[in-house]
Length: 191
Image 1: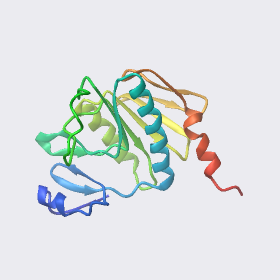
Image 2: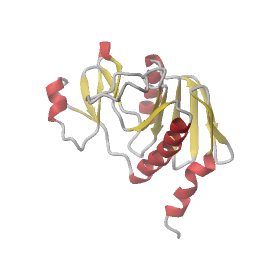
Image 3: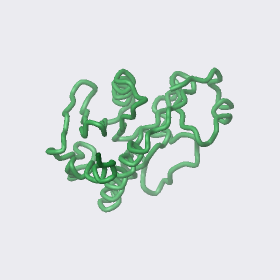
């Protein structure tokens, strides 16, 4: 992660459209690119969430969208995957054509890349909850584990033998953790 000196909206416009960034306390923080493996995993999870949310008419699942979490301190975060319920952003109200979506997602998902640090992830989890996110999933692809946070200090660690559920955000959503990682094994080179 690198910071730029110009925290203004003009500074945001100067960033290359191909780069991802967040805004932390008015400072633009450029995000390191997600690895291909982690990007693929985020896309897989997005597919499951989108399908479920559409089928049950619950809300919108998105990937790599910038959210305006706390305008008073200029906090804009870009979870790898997120879910916004129709209760927070009504269905008839389209997703805005703006730099950041001015809503706090119900669910935020971070897929940990080699460039992420533990402190960075833990701080983001706490920040998401302070902003009003109801649940945070942190996925460690290399360990094939999903950390499900119900609060900044309450976490369940799921492995391939477990089932990822959507409570309290996506009631009745069920996904075997093994299903999330199964195609990952097929794509890894054999020794």
